[in-house]
Amino acid sequence: MKKFNITLGLLNLAILSAMLISFSLDDNNDFDAEKTTYQVGPWKIPNYLNFSNESVPMNDIDVKERFDKEMLINTYWHSATLLNIKKANRYFPIIEPILAENEVPDDFKYLAVIESGLDPNSRSPSGALGLWQIMKATGKELGLEINNEVDERKHIEKATQAACNYLKKAYKKFGSWTLVASSYNAGVSRINKQLNTQHVDSYYDLYLNSETSRYLFRILALKEVLNNPQKYGFKYSKKDLYPTYKYKEIEISTSIKDIPSWAKENGTTYKMLKVLNPWLKEPYLTNSSSKLYKIKLPV
Image 1 (cartoon, rainbow, N blue to C red):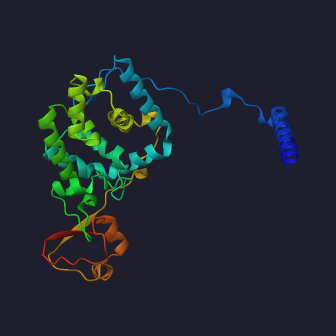
Image 2 (tube, rainbow, N blue to C red):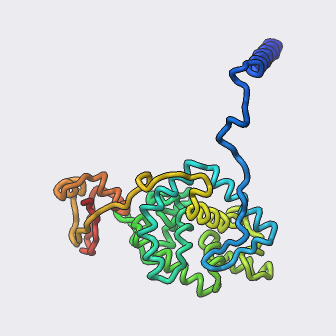
Image 3 (cartoon, rainbow, N blue to C red):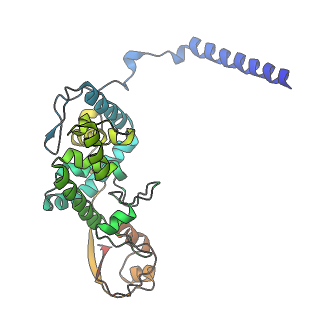
């Protein structure tokens, strides 16, 4: 049996070699570099970058190379980056005014991009949920309703407000938006501990685990690409982008026994109601406390 396997292996190797020789001798398969339009190469790294108006030390070789790595990943991972560009057109107009109202820098919208890919239904293996990937316990601490029927971590506006509350509290601790961003990934206490242990005061001087070390550079790379898509080879027209949803809101302070039927009575489908209100977990809403909810319906 062993001898047969060896013989079979040699036979396969011979066939493969013959195929490769045949390919190399076939005039129709000649590679002409001058006729090739698709080329892969490194991008010229900007000399100046900032996050929330805090300068990135691009003269630091380690910083420059970590940014370069994330640029290569995000510019050549075409499908994911193009989807981010398309979805940004839908969700940034919702996120931006809430950040501005809370005096949180606009750059934090890119944090939502790397956290969830701008998918309100995104769930991490650890259980973080929504555009801002908020953990259940953290969400409750931030005032979000999370129970068997409702999960406001998937409510875009309320989750964005909750994220702002977290970010503002962290800024009071660190006084640096760069450190605030890193703490969103690692936690305030862990970042503070590492600052004290390593006797530094900058994210760029910290030695951290792989995920947190990449975190801000992923944000910076997405910011650079989404602000200059044409420069990095992403070509599209306005009609290619995902539009914002047009909707009206209906206030409800009672229970809804059958949400699919209720949706049909209001001129839509359960599917579209869930698209606009992903925070509704079940096809019913008990609402025993008579809480006021605003449910979006398409127009």
